[in-house]
Length: 201
Image 1 (cartoon, helix red, strand yellow):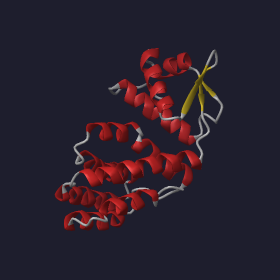
Image 2: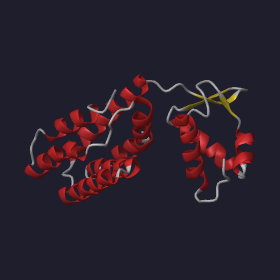
Image 3: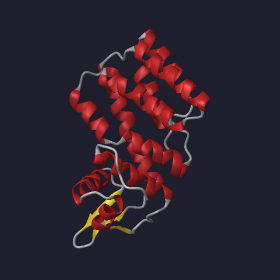
């Protein structure tokens, strides 16, 4: 593994840990030794500890007394629960505010370009940005904070890599949402909820 050279370290270390979890470097139940990982990456233990805490908050890592950090077994049920909560939050956001249709169209166009280029990471990035626009438009800072705390990007990548779902892969799935918001369709919030749940395993 190459030493970490980019900042911020915590985010880069979290990315490396996620790739290791998804790629099978660590198996469910296996211990992740903070000191060993810090030495391997050429960093202090502090950013490693911070990254592990973030992954624990996302329920990907569990810390046991006197045993340190261990890998949780991620199940389809875990993913389904995240999508259920996310769907409820986004439905509520859509009821509270009017999403900026022009910005949604921009993200949709970017998703189309990413799909044409075969860049899954960009598809995920713009798909999440599309949904964040909707949540932010609610004007409710608490709702936005809770939505962001779900780790939507992390779970989207995990759903694609572990369970082979097609989350955010088909830009066309988002077009009916834009049309509903543009028309002021009262069914738009429920349509958004069903759209999100459609990606759950």
